[in-house]
Image (cartoon, rainbow, N blue to C red; front, side):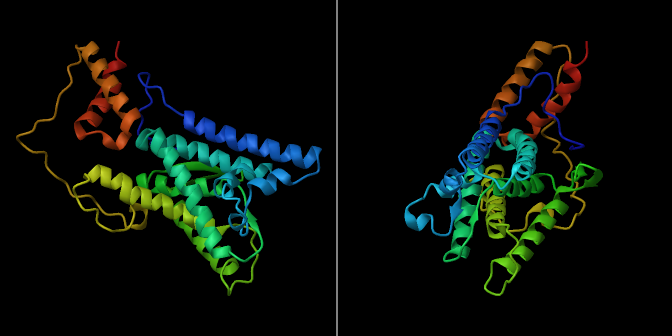
Length: 297
């Protein structure tokens, strides 16, 4: 459960989650078919067809670079991954838009597969499951909201409150350590987890935030400075910039409810088309003020 969420989900907005529903439906359908083959026909044919192994691309099975999220180890693996993907994806949708979320998902899947294949070529084993998507979403979410408090039940029993930047640090640390211990020539531990795939998906998420989202916000004609994401930086007080005297903030007229609703509808259409990051400061202020004004009788 997320707290202190910047809400754009008032009575005047319907959130678009069709991509997430399609993604979850496809993954669950793949798992169902996998179990039909395994339980009814005692066959792993579908699992072998979709899972990515170190020999698959060399044998011409290039589709496994994108099909491996359709099969999972067990139902707990499926549930935990899809639970995280849905709730993080639902938070990212209003910011980056549906098309970009779909592109980010595809990039994470392919990037994770390519890095895992390069590291594990010539070795046994395979990868399956949508955990790289979850890793990518976590990094992007931590870049947007490094200090937002989030609460969840650890193992569905123990309430935990933390911040996304700490979860991102933990995930990166676990996968780096696991990669060194299990997927390098000096590693002797078999964790059964594709740590290199997770790291590839995390890198895809960070690259998106740094070079796609940030470049949109700063303008394509400006050079994007290479630096650390927000959750890797020490927190510091932002400088206070006084508002310019020649540009007074736009004021909303409470009595003009029809005009206000029209302006809100225009801004919401812009969010659905270009993402929340495309809004100007004035448009964000309009949404904040409109939520209170439109709720008055």
